[in-house]
Length: 342
Image 1 (cartoon, helix red, strand yellow):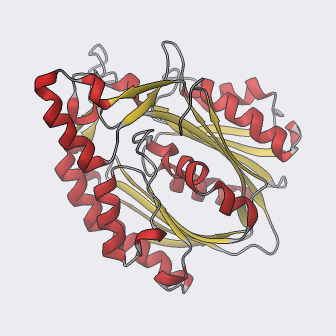
Image 2 (tube, one colour):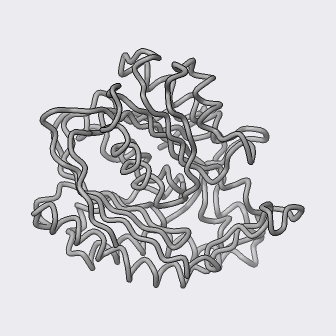
């Protein structure tokens, strides 16, 4: 596990997007399977998820998020030094989503645009990567885009994942600042976890097989309890924060039972741990910024907050960050559902 500190960079705005279609878990099973689904919902806290329509992609959602973010921040197209897109569901194997999004948004040709293939730890890794790079460049602003359309990666009869994974994308405004607090990151990888959370089809090994995401939930749970508390504690130690000084801990929204166990293990009080996946599901790398928009927008828009953010999953890969955020310029949700009850 690597602990590192980033200076002179902060988050200044967040826009998240949820697709229009809502799928209820209770409607996805026959009557004889209803008890099994009830157990899944009770354990995970996920009653429904949002999924993209046919032909709709993470790039489409990202375009909507970035347009609103840029207009809300009043950034010009030639202000942006970096556009980083973290996704496991790009439109094409090549070119990546970032270069296409750069063109759609009309960003300057001097913008550095590239993708990173990461899932549930991707927001924290992306924040670390883009912040490090921004400190080396003359322009002071960057766009971090995170999210997947995981619903396109499995069939509905694949119960171990179909009840859990939804679709979402978040766009985050990152910029240099003179007086902002340092961000402390703790990052780690254990490739031994490869077989337990994997999309084995559609790549170079088995290019012609239909997508079918596989997850061993017990192995995920064991890995998470083993590595994530240590990662969070190392950030707190380096930041010199006590647990009770943290306003909120926002972890990857995997399932409710897991987050409660992790919070207890670190020592957070119930009210410090944000849980917001009940009607959106596990949204991969978008889950942390989406949770900020869903549950903490008022707090983030009106005052300074001490936050611990932690993502974990495919790889195994995990990353945590402790940071103090001043008031954001924007923190909002674009809900494409016509009848949103979020």
